[in-house]
Image 1 (cartoon, rainbow, N blue to C red):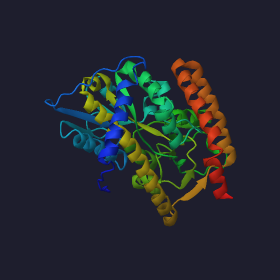
Image 2: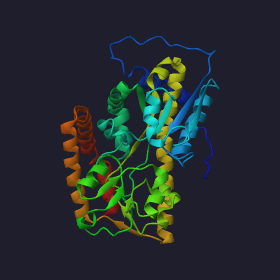
Image 3: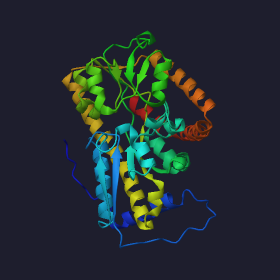
Amino acid sequence: MRKFKRRDFLTKSSAAALTVSSAVIAGCSAQKKEEKREAPYLNFNQNYRWKMATTWAPNFPILGEGCNQFANWIKEMSGGRMEVRVYGGGELVPALEVFDAVSNGAIELGHGASYYWAGKIPAAQFFSSVPFGMNAQEMNDWLIGGGGVELWQQTYQPYDLFPFPGGNTGVQMGGWFNKAINSMADIQGLKMRIPGIGGKVFTKAGGTAVLSAGGEIYTNLERGVIDATEWIGPYHDYIMGFQEVAQYYYYPGWHEPGTALELFVNRPKYDELPSDLRAIVATAAYRLNTWIFTQAEHMNSVYMQKIIEEGKVEIRKFPDDVLATFKKFSKETVYELTGSDEKSRKIYEAYLSFYQQIARYSKYTEKIYYSTLSS
């Protein structure tokens, strides 16, 4: 297992500034602006020992390691008054039951991706990733700067949960296939592990979407239970060993162009914390959000080159007509979802409004810059 060197990313001054801003976000976002802010509540005589369950395998690279870092930051910033013990998926509760465990107060913290709870909260998917939607930078812009977090908090409030952005995978890869995809005819009847809205699109296109925890994917692909899988990106895909059991590696990740992860806390227990510890939890969460994304971007660039040089699989771009069809079905799927669920409609309207706004701006910045590089 790769070990990361722990570094002090924050100077005393920047830590103080970030603590103040995070405290405002965490403590006041659910209140109306005109309401008077409550007086700080401090208690230096009580210690807190919390549990955190994740949807990832124990100590899973970057994602699980990031959660371990989060626990370390909590302990350091609180001077040992608060400690968090991290459990991987299946160690304390099954990976896909983390949401319920935190919601009912059995444990205090969870980490995963909001589209895992689509069966419970269809609207939650929009806080993770939308096919052909926003990338990681734009998702962070919307969630943190454009009001997305406030909508997220409102969505989770009935479940006694308080969510934070908890990382981002960046643009994912399109997936591993044991069959060449030359046209939409090759999608018909194909069984693929693919969650979220992307899974619904894949099913609409004639395939069969399968949802399974990360620890089951390799065996399912090897034994032919599934014909294809997406996971995250070159680094995580490689250490999962998919290059040993699949023939083709496709790009781009149309289904997850910038997948936001989440850290969520049991709201009643969070509210019971002294105000400084609430600020510390929020600060550590936003630090985790940045840490996971930067680590993923770096390691994906290294391992993509490794996969290319080893030459065990054929790396292919999805045909243009396949991508165009997926995009068409993506629009239909989102339309159907928002038409049948009021919360999804409200959240997607906010998502789309921000996306259109940021796209108008990016034509003067990122888009023109990248087109210049490729010309």
